Image (cartoon, rainbow, N blue to C red; front, top):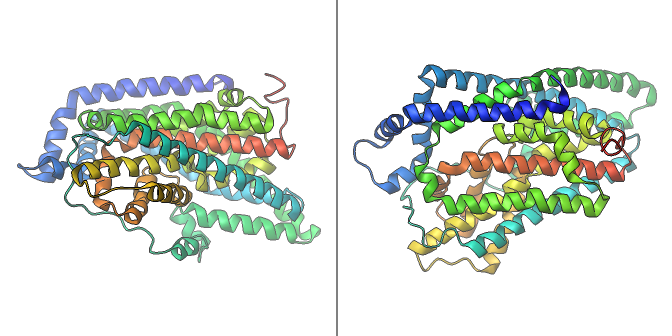
Length: 454
């Protein structure tokens, strides 16, 4: 399979998966959805009950689709592809970070790259959040919308304090953290390992660095194999999504979904490319062509952590950024840089606030409260895991801060998956362009790979 035409195979997989899922949906969804409602809610129920337990109903529908032959095949292939991606993520992250940090040569350069990386990630996330704030106030998707508000629910538990988040960054047992697929503690340990490897004597550092370079090379080859399976895996992922997503509730929330999607598109196609051009005079759309397999994988998996192997392979071999930069910037981005999530958190919170204010006129979010939402959305997006639905879980923190009932997060489950796919693609795009920007200033881009060829 020719690598430069690989994005076409992935796009074909998306189309095949959409057709596969549509056929399943037309054949089974109506009966499965009715049976799932009766299973979860009983024979009599109110619209508010359905909103409160939307997640449970969707899970019941998914189980029923898995009982069919075609639905079981979609679930099995999709799960296998995700398992293969997760299999390579942790050793690839560990090896790439250690090689990236150790390959910088001195602490001064580490500080320079780290500072530039942090500046890109914070500024782009803030721009995304402000974009969401402006759009949701201008469009007002939650004003005068007839969506029943849930009366009760079982919200997830947020961290009790900032110390919980900080302590979670330091693993008591790095192997246990890896087994639980906790990326942030593994990244912290990897960076510290690379820093102290850099501080070791040359004679002792050389064989250890050579081991990790060899490990990284092996993991990149394994990653290439897993990526070659992406068209089939993505077809199954899309089929599983399309089959089990009913249109009724989505239509009720169309204004909200359109606002989120519009904000994400504006950040994806306008803000980030303009920022890259302003800083480096490089064309982001040339980069987009080469990294499209990573973007499509992010869209289909809704996991920036799961997409990391594809992202790293495309940035190095498709764009020409050296591993000294990409091996440091991309793993951090997959964990802490969530532009799309930040925008989504802001829009979703203000959308629910608009709905709630329609039913409770005494509730009002002034400019101070909205700026608090902007700040919290930025901070919460940093702490959100790079896995599906992580942003929706973390939104509980924002709801509690501004006085919204946390059970109202259940309203958003019905349309969260397609929006999660879109915001993950934005997250990964920001990671990629941030890596290109840092690589430009560090003079770590092989111009022959993309920019001279273009």
